[in-house]
Image (cartoon, rainbow, N blue to C red; front, side, top):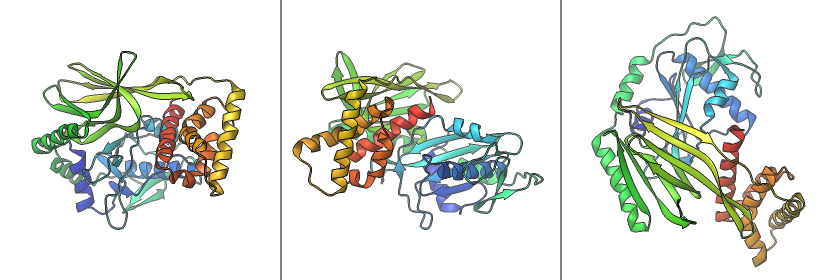
Length: 378
């Protein structure tokens, strides 16, 4: 079992970017350019490492190696993107790794790439890269190559040594469990559960009860042995259940207009543990968007646009407008689900203005997260 935080530290401390390891300040999969560059690096690393894992570390300053962190990213369908654009697509996993010195809402992203048999190539055109293109790592650079190049295994021993050094240990596991338990002093519920005498899951949050149902808010859930954050959100609310074999996270989102707000289930994640020391994470999107009267939504949409324009003109908002601004990301998301206007594009255009209102900007990022989940699974 590999402690992913130690693995990242070893990669950063002992290796420059090379044919099995790359680092990024951030990756942006919302634009075709960002997707294309990400796919290029995945393709190149897979072709350069036919018999071992390759890694991309996200949230690190490229020049200084300083760990800065990125937002929690939980797109479980990243493999679908890779499969859609790459021939002989590698197996890929994106994990959110907690670091104690980072703010609670920041993690380091770890992309693990495991090559399959054969040369990996682009299946179709994307951005400025053409279908059929093959990439390979030349030192720290992902370069195009001809089909005739030979795949060589030169990194297995090095990667195996790094992964062995990053093996989990009892001290790190116990330290992390104690850190979670100390959150009780901040008014949070904190718990841990051991599965199959080997895996430890910790979680914390505030408990809210509504209609005889129990929900956690301000939720943080971590597979402690590997320092992998399974879930984090200051916005969403979840229900947590478990037995001797499985740990289940059912994620909800509150949506509505005015006081009429309801809980809508978004995603179910089940972590299944097996006696042979392995586990499997299963994700399923179960979201059904609420439907509203379109005339009402057009009125709300136009009012939101007026608010954004007023903010852009640096005019002071009234108390009522400030309240409406707090609800703007949520009502824009409802407009998106009901095909009213261009709500996400409009919010993004005024992103810097929203950033001046911390809670509103947090809600905006939360809306993008929910939308990304639903989009990739629809």
